[in-house]
Length: 216
Figure 1 (tube, rainbow, N blue to C red):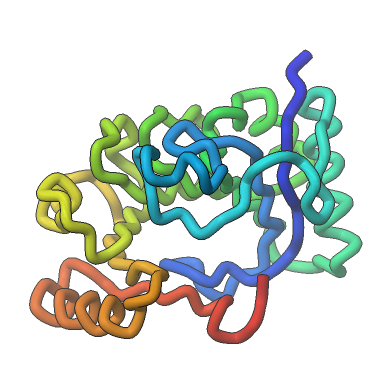
Figure 2: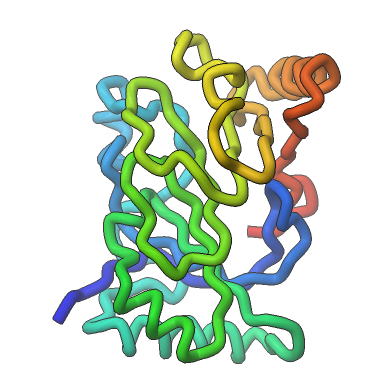
């Protein structure tokens, strides 16, 4: 039976993209295939600008869960304890890279508890069937295998030629978002992303609104 390693689990509002403002359980799996999560390895990582702690299982409501039923029961408990009532229960599987662990048995177990399932992935692994909302955030120098879904969210700007917005416009996604890179030049990045979206209306601007209003 598979053991699932979870960094943290909490209820908040989705702060990014087309689902902004929707209440959801964030199920953050530990681990990633593009960076170890350790600062000593950042310079040599494939993805160098991640702003998330996904190392270990010591976060809020984190831990190791033996089998898909235990994982789904845990997510349901976090949702109900936060007062989730009415509407469709929604869980966003994120990381790190959630598709390293989110497998068909876990998806089936979450469905049995009534959850609509979203995933935020770097796209280097193919998503299994049963996920309701696939958000792909491609990274330079990482082969993109998940080339369709509901949402493509590109961190902007990136210097690499293969990470420019025009490289992804032919892919099969319903929504295309530019998300300004969250670093010391954030104000300039927001202005650049906004200007690009105005000139290229296939793309929409996605801000991390949860950070703007003080939510996790």
